[in-house]
Amino acid sequence: MIGRVFVALALLAPATALGQSPDARLGRVPAAVRSAVAPVIDSANLGGLPIGPLIEKTLEGSAKGASPEAILSAVRALAGALGDARRSLGPGSSPDELNAGAVALRLGAPTGDLARLRAVRSSGSLVVPLGVLSDLVARGVPADTAARVVLALASQGDDQYLAFRQRVDRDIDLGAAPIGSAIGALNSSGRAALANPGKQP
Amino acid sequence: MSEHDEGIERIARELKRAVPVSPDLDRRVMARVLAEARPARARTRWLGMGLAAAAALAGVLILTRPGRRPAGVAFSLVAPRAASVAVVGDFNDWNPKATPLARTRSGTWEVRVPLGPGQYNYAFVVNGSNWVPDPRAPKVAVDDFGSPNSVITVAGASL
Image (tube, rainbow over all chains, first blue to last red):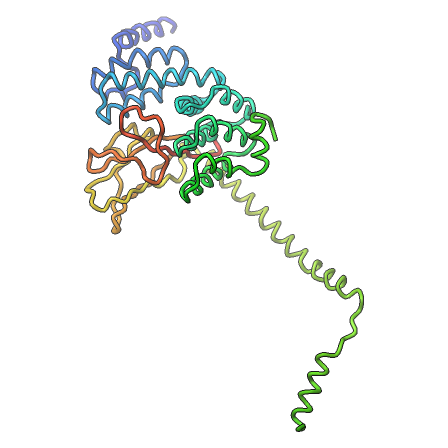
């Protein structure tokens, strides 16, 4: 049995060594792109990072007609952010959490705030809070403010996070400044928590 | 003064006359009102608890079903002059052929995509080559390829 496993590994190893990714989805991208990103994806895989986001980034770049260099640069940046996210959020984080954390970090969220968010919500998923953080930044709220606001709401459930984001969206659509909308949408307990981010209200 | 006028005046006097009222009338009326309201409130509470239990049970049944997928997220784009619109994103490997939108009479293109909990980047591809972000959703601030994406966060109990 062990011998068969070794034979199978020996047959698979050359494929990786030649830069062929184990994920069939990369078969859609040009060979030049595939060979460029394969070492980064293999390295992330060996390091225990989720490779799904890296493959999706490759597919996105390829679909948009980006050059292999641009795709490689984006995949490298994302792989680095995934590693940073794991350091901030902890090794037990889910792939979705790491991906959301990587996006938040690339947007400029402080690593310390991600670690504090994990500490406060140790038992729940961080995908929605981190997603809301990214949404706020996308709406024009400065990253450090968005991170603090999300941290101030850390004791809330996912539904409250999404309701909060909708209030911010509505206020911005009505003409309010993004940063004022984010802070204004916090309720009184949230504002109190904003003064001491990371502490349970 | 006619007999008719005298009658009206008498009625007016009667209406203006102070009626002797028991000093604890207010208390007795409120006690009665509260006694009437209590069963209704209790019924509402039990009905609410029943509905909540049913919703929780339904949620559990949906969440524990093998291969569970939520009902779907609606994507739409107003593009009356477009010949085709597709949505591409993390959920379909950025494949422009995977998720075409259907045109309505008003010129709005729509599709509903089953998405599990998570955060997704996406964009619309109009006429097969024109990439446009969703005008109704926030755009991702980090743009790696010179063509901004939109972002959507889907919540779920399994997160």
